[in-house]
Image 1 (cartoon, one colour):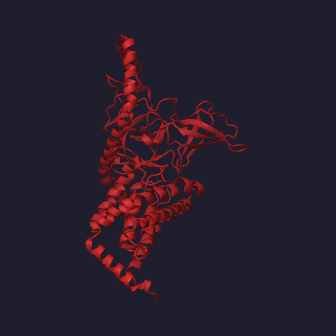
Image 2 (spheres, rainbow over the protein chains, first blue to last red):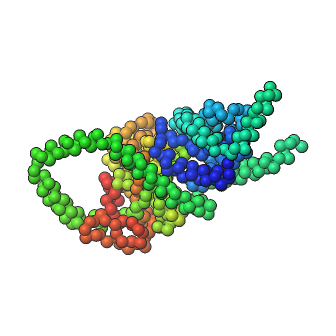
Length: 175
Length: 312
């Protein structure tokens, strides 16, 4: 995917995150589009791009919020990179993969956010954070992730999809 | 030397991680000013946020209207029946309206109210599930400064914590970092009201023997000099604590989920902050609650909000 499309998508996600998603709150939480994007990019294009998209979306979000700059950049970069580490190990057509990786990525990312917030004196009890934010958000993100992933996968460059298919067929032949 | 140390990516990641940690450390305390990057980005995205917010509001308004259609139909039928039985109701209502206008003019509410407000549209919300903030379409160009109180007709919303040229970010009362001096209207017992990242707030009293009951109204105390005294904050929904600590759970007066328009308190005699150079608001001949004439596009002097409070 071209870099300017990625930047455009990230900017659109940042705007939607602070406006549109406020109307789709379920169980007290809104989904994290930027995290979904980072995980999807990681799974499609590997850890470096996953981390880069996570970092870009996170830093834009941090600058917009104006509190603890770097908090979301760090947590989303980690989530994107972790999803990217699974890139070579999984079948990308399988929609269970974005579901699972987004759930795990959200839990790890939000635990990182919680730890940083706790370290700077924002002492929310872990049980409350777990019940009120981390678990509902992880489920919500995971449910939405296959839809976004499918769109991004369909619009992945043809050379990329062909190269992927070639790699997979070679590895299956080797086995 | 391990292979990873020869990779360019490794150094890019390392530099980014260190820079992020430095940024985090530098911004962990509340800052008095914003960086140029923050200001530029926030102002650049503000029009997009405003358009997106308006579109979302229009769409959700349509859905709400559809959902209410059935209820409105039966209510309409009922009202028609009532109206048919009251032929003089229309005339009576018109007379009362005229009388009401006259009384309002006589009271001259605008002169009596000690506060001045600037109205603002909510164009954005906190983009994560950890902070409770919102963004409004007024900034330093409109005279907004940090720590100004933000209210609605129902009561206190929060305070301004970040200001750029065209926008301001408001920390809601429910945010965990929010703490305000407040008192119980009935007993005048004071304490600190804190957000808990939940719908309700927690008030901790200075006096462990504070007289507080469920249903009591909670107002700003004016003690921390940020908020004018007497703005309604909420009502006590639960009282707890034994011995040295007495606490109360307070249900906020404001519905934070449906905020579309707010008022920023630009000046109050208690805090003396904001725009002291503004001329005295002139009450309109037609309506005393109409906006006054200072430079701000919708600067209002002494409109009635928030209701139910006590005059400082």
